[in-house]
Image 1 (cartoon, rainbow, N blue to C red):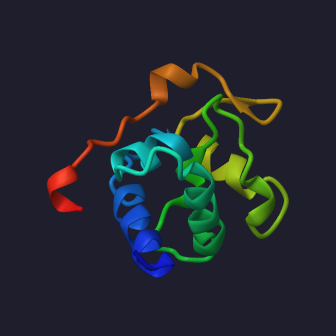
Image 2: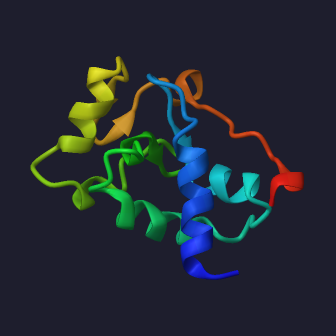
Length: 111
């Protein structure tokens, strides 16, 4: 599978994350049947930070930390976007992470 194909599959999942919810790099990798590819999902998010059709701000690490925030233009843009959706952030970490976590569906038949 080519990198571009993988990135597009990641973006398809990220577009499904509901407003006011987040998911993790690893959860996306698992949904794609590529459990050990969380880092590659991170690379896809890095490449998507300027794409308006991909809500990359809704993807965080497995602990709810805003590890990708430095890839957004401006100071604290990722945090501001999440807070505008009602997500509470403290010290670069989502408060009540489990309550706003969205688990992508595993769709092996699609991939």
